[in-house]
Length: 336
Image (tube, rainbow, N blue to C red; front, side, top):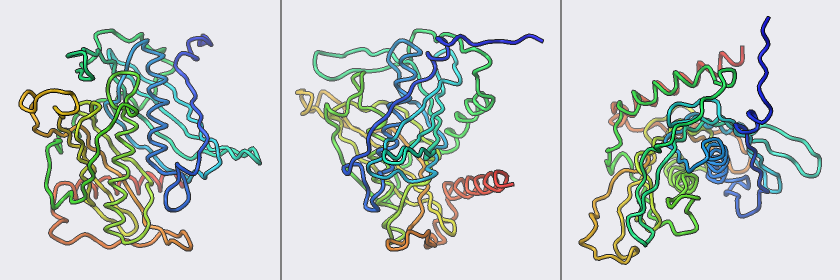
């Protein structure tokens, strides 16, 4: 028998850990750590791992199945273990696990799992201001050892493009996505490249999606799953961002919320004339969240009201029903 060993330095190059102490500023109204804070931490860890592996700037292009298994409490240390488990010419997938450690007892538990796709990027600065543009990186990634490649990564990479074509990123129906938040990311939101970090964007989207869920359920709601994220264009510091969100599917005890980020550049922030930049908004990101409603006193999961019948014939409702059925079957198979 031939036994293959992976060099420790090679394994260390694909695996990184990021830890942070959860403070009261990270808490939501239920007293637990806000889901957006966890998403921001996951993106940072994934960017850390992919940048170290590719030896250059990277950016998130998609994310799938970020599960919120247990809440993280204030005072605990959240640590993210990120490993690069698939590489193409320019794209990488990072699988991550979040552990929460109680500092008093030393007990650790897995609270979140996530898979994110990153791409190498080349950054071209347009001027001496903060404006820049990005394109797929010209540098090729070093091949990943076959024993470290995840079996499901290739299939996921092929199916993601087909799913993106099913519902294009141009829906802007005010009735379908009624909740609107507006924000202008500042320099503090920029990553190590001159663009707003995807973690900051995901945190804004989680806030908007939570408002849509609370408005529908009339109870406090928490994120249980980030099912899908598609990034189409980067957001720059100073861009006017409108986060639109709305409930698109409901089951007995869960709600699927679609959130989008529409951006338009600001000539005022860049110090340029208003007529020198097209102010037409474009959809930069779309994500699907799953929320449940909780009783504020007991913390038990509550039933949620169903959407009106006229909203149960849309394409997004059909996709939500299909995804809910897949999650239910996966949960049953896991229990057995």
